[in-house]
Length: 328
Image (cartoon, rainbow, N blue to C red; front, side, top):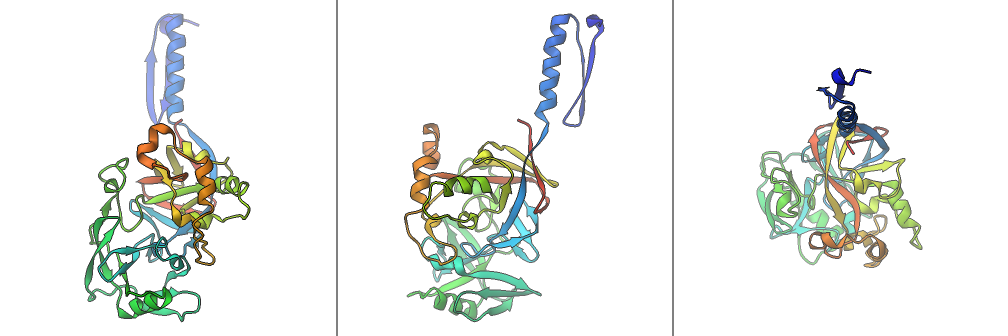
């Protein structure tokens, strides 16, 4: 081989890289550099999408779907967007399953342009999906101002009766023309251009079946993935492997990991009964899923379980899609 005139053509991230080098030693070095360039854009299979869950109502029952549109602001299935409906007090302050555990039993669905509310022991309530003449409420979600279209007195009475509240509750809907919340106002690790409606902080939360299985191996009573309210559930990977996935490609959707999900008392609400134990699985998670000391300022003492992602390229995700890690 004539190393004095050696040239290497490499393709990395769809771009041609031409290296012209001289000398045998330099050739070895540049070959290594070219290989690393190739690897930096590699696509590695890391799992398979086993479930897609959309939670139209914040803290309400999740809906398992076979296909979802993945937008910058979160998942959408049909007429329902993830966490775009919210229960509030009369003064506009949010109400979640932390304060009202029975909210996890409320199913908000749509049928032919009608919004449907269902819950144990309650008659189904149907109302128009869009009610443009209803007033817009000023709401508060984790101390941040955000608007919501009031869904009417019937929905308010239904929720107040189901939650057996001593005060009145109302249902509001986040509409496309309204200004979303900045994720960075809640967690500084998010960029200033990332926005959400009523989710806690991020547009997409991902969790693996294996991580839930690992946790169940430490519990006296198994819990299901629904307890942790992810959007994307991944199978065919090792427990907590998702902690290391920085860039993902699923179908034509590209996701970027921002941070872990720090868990709270809401994980102790049983999604099947609406009963809060205030113990498990949170206590067990605290025993082995604490953050590194260098991250204590971010997560405090909250155990980490699942990962928040932002959407860098929108598109369609389906159950059965292969999950690829991009880069190393």
